[in-house]
Length: 349
Image (tube, rainbow, N blue to C red; front, side, top):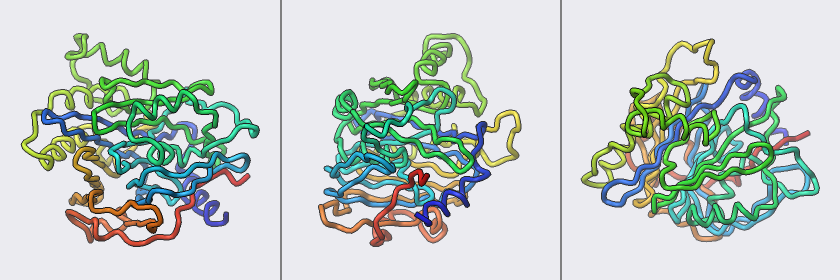
């Protein structure tokens, strides 16, 4: 408990306010040869102690809530990236399912917490999907019958962590899940390849249709806002050439997410919800590679999930990739080390 309170207090006080958000971008690309890649930018105000972590199958999970936690046992092993030793904010499992959470300001609302209902903490929302589902279709169907709630993390300054979730699989299927007014809105279609931040997904799709290539006549926008990044990401991913191999495919995906990244620079007081990109990732869902690129360093590293033993009973593994990035390059699978069990952040009050 003291560890969680200390981490939250030191890291999050002063970083979050009503107007400070976590702007990021996620893109799915089905290459011409059937390969599927997911690219993501993580935009934030500072390094987030991001670390690779491996979870084996058969883990007994308990919802990170004070009352009536939902409990489950993981069916699949996963490789994820954790932040601040508090949450899984993205990852891929051994079946090729990818998941990420991105900030959603304004309309996001998980509903008032009812202690009579079971709940899962928002810090483990991504992990729940990676633990339990092999495909997007399976996950979306299961979502229809969920009876548990998502419990937000209330920060020390009183503001909640408001995010929406994206999932994709190695068939190229994709979905976005947003909670508005306490209800989960699910947007499920292989066409839904891009996700940024506010506004809600239905409004993002409507806005996209105003631009060239997507039915409208407006030119490609160039601002750093979530809506502009959404349009650019959709355009560039749709126009990628067929890669010669999986390495080239990953490079093409990086070319897209680098284009929609936010460079380092002086903050814009008129747009406090736009932060610089601190890292980029690419998930090669068909090849099983997980690439990581810190914007604080010039090198790219990756982990090959086909070399990982996800068997039940194996130890959790970790690589403090952000901390160690200057010592790393290329395939770093053998740099993973045994780690103490991860403790997901939760409200202590």
